[in-house]
Image (cartoon, one colour):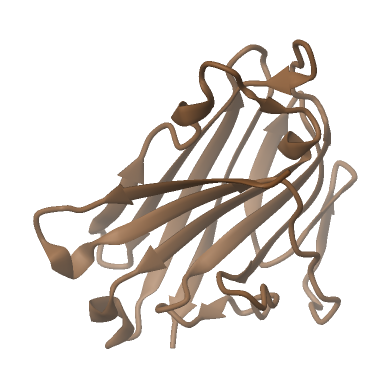
Amino acid sequence: MKKQIYLFLLPSLMLVSCEFKCNIGKVNEPTNNHKKVIEKEGAVIFNGIELAANKVKLNKAYLVENNKSGKSINENNFIDVKEGVKLMLIIDSGWTAINNSVWLGASMKVTADNGEVLMNKQDMFEEFNENGISINDSKFLALSVFFTEWYAKRPVSLDVTFNIWDKKGEGSIIGKYRVHTK
């Protein structure tokens, strides 16, 4: 079962508005066109994603286009800013399950190359605080970012930091990646 959470943040300046979206459940697999693949503690990591997993066994981490095709982002991390980018995480184990459910939190922050913070969202899974999500869905996580037309009109580099944590246990994944607009 796939669940989606749509989170909007509309800052007073519409020029720098973004949208975040979290998905739990099945995710797209990366293509094998990457030459710069890192293996860390048994996980396969694409796109120069830097991360640290604590008490969570990560299987894969990679970036895809945030559209219906879900095509892998090239290894240089150039994106179509209108489409946005989706971080895909495949987790083998580590979340604390109670009655086949887990309670996760997720935060994301996006900073432009000029230091301007475009987005800072704290608990993207807050909607699931009462009942949690199924343990099976928690193995496939996707965190998406979209940007406005204004950023599509000029090349820019964007730093995205993320934190996913277990609200009932000690597991967490903290990381960052950089993407570039065309």
